[in-house]
Amino acid sequence: MDIFALIDIFLKIIPLLKKGFHWIVNRIKWHGISEDVRKIALAFNSYSWVYLQQTPLAIDFVGVIERPEINQIRQCWQLSDQPIILYGEAGAGKSGIALRLGQLMATDGIPTFFIKASDLPRNQDPIVTIQNRMPLKDPLLDSIASLCKERECVIIIDQLDSVAATDLCKSLVGFIKTLVALPQVKVLIVSRTYELQHDPDISSLNFQKIESGQLAVEQVASYLSQIGIESPSQELVELARNLLHLSLIAEAAKSSTNHILDLTDDIDLWKQYYLTIQQREGEEIADYVLKLAQEVTSRGEHTFSVSFPKSEYRRKLLSRCILIDAPGRRYTFRHEQLQDFLCAYSLMPKKLEFNEILRELGKNGLKEGVLKWLHKLYHVEFPDEEASFVDYVLAANEDLPFYTRASIL
Image 1 (cartoon, rainbow, N blue to C red):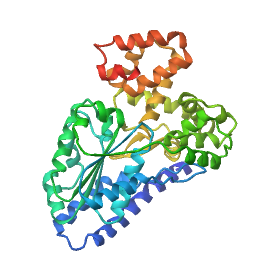
Image 2 (cartoon, rainbow, N blue to C red):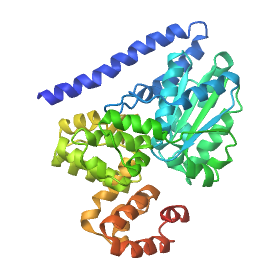
Image 3 (cartoon, helix red, strand yellow):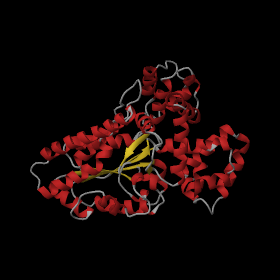
Image 4 (cartoon, helix red, strand yellow):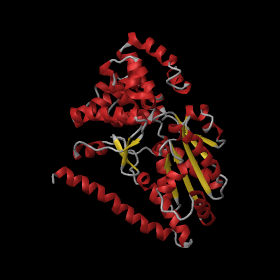
């Protein structure tokens, strides 16, 4: 057995030991509630463990950025059980806020149920899917009702926008509306701004809204200084106000800050980020991650099973946080934007026409996020082809829904 295989085994054992320790701690915290309800609470935390045990995003040179939205949500919940929608643009840090909030509530001894919509199969009833993954004696909704009679609980549904305009979204919204009618249930829904405003199901949730906003200019200047960039351009500061972009800038700065000063838009930044994968992880892994992004996107998957060619691939991709663990021994890219960009970028060397792209990815794969990146990349790489690409997309009414086609306008 090689050293990488041993490291892989060791990394798998540590989370199991932590989970066992937290199981004991939670049994102590929940002393005083009935045994049946304690089992429901343990089932909640067991389902949520794969998410709640994740380490909050620490940006290189900066560390973990504390978000005021967390205290804002907690203060709202101290006053009432009113459900909340956390919204914002892609990369604004919404999922990080939801994750940290879930961790804090669980640490406080509050049963916490963390659901990521993008990890649920789109062709199945979400309630049945979730229930089948939990050791519950009674149906899911009955179990939640039993729990909240004895103890308040928190239910967080992250990335609802990722299933917008699907039957899964309709089912989840129906599930959410049932939850908020129960006493002592605190519900947080996470969505991007566009879907919150335009998807008929998500927009029907008339909840209190809290925005996950961009970082303040003064904050960004301080963070960039910590990264080693003392005189950033206005374009770079504006780019770094997005938390995801700031993290990518910090990763790229580990090689050199000189080329970062010339960054003016997100295309340059993401291409620079991919270059760091090539430089640090090697061409072989960089090529593999492009291929993987295209394959899983063409299957319409955000969460997926994968057989790595070498155990070293898994270790490096998880260590670099390009991939993260998901329930059921599956994986997901660290951010939906990363998967979308890598998929779109993988197609650039072929300089495909729209119909060829459609054949490569299929209708399931050619979704809003990928189309947006393709449009941006065509604008930079093939400016003479951009107008015809847009025309083809807008005319593809038989292949793509209006919601998807309109995303490039």
